[in-house]
Amino acid sequence: MTKRSIRSTTAAAVPLLLGAAFVAVPLSAQTFTPVETPSTSNFNVFVEQIGERHEATIEQSSNTQTAEVRQEGSDNEATLEQNDNGSHIAVLGQDGAGNTAEVAQSGDGEAVANLIQQGDNNTILLSQTDNGLLGTAAEIAQSGNDNMIGLVQDGSDNQARLVQNGNNNTMTASQLNSGNRLEWVQDGSGLSDMTVEQTGGQTMFILQTNGG
Image 1 (cartoon, rainbow, N blue to C red):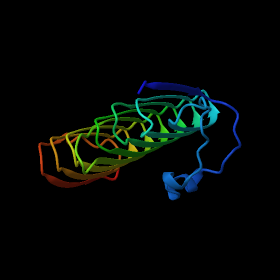
Image 2 (cartoon, one colour):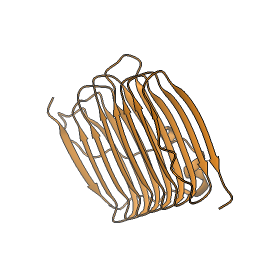
Image 3 (tube, helix red, strand yellow):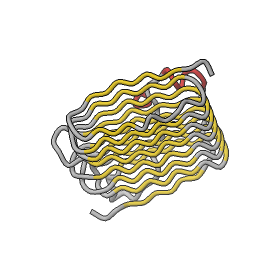
Image 4 (cartoon, one colour):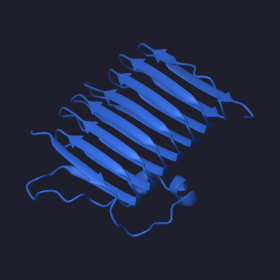
């Protein structure tokens, strides 16, 4: 199937009350506005932008893929690429200013990503590849300012949950091959990057905090 590319910039929308509700309500339960597509297309793209100068670019290769983006504030950027024929799902919420998210999903298996950023100048870089039957999933959330999370999952049946709260924190993780489980939580400011890498069938839980 021919790849479809959609680019959306900030447009007028009905204001929504975000604030605490933006965190408390799961993204999957929130309402997204479909982007207008040709009647012959079954691609699933939903974008909602409130504020100024947001950008969302979405590329899909198959009608089995779903992408949802919700942006509030100003100058937030999102790039979602869904390649091959897998049942890929990416749901992204950005609330603040100058946040960036780049998500790439590929393979003929299932890849799921649920991402949220709150604050200013935060970055999420996620790459998922799955060609197996069990699927790969990532849940990433960060709040604060000037934080960065980078995750690469290469293989199948990999699962990661990364949470980062505070300022000037960095997290990177690479799960290679298959069957890995990672849960990593950082709470504080200026925390050092522990750079986790797992090769296959591994499980790791990390908690890092400080009073900064």
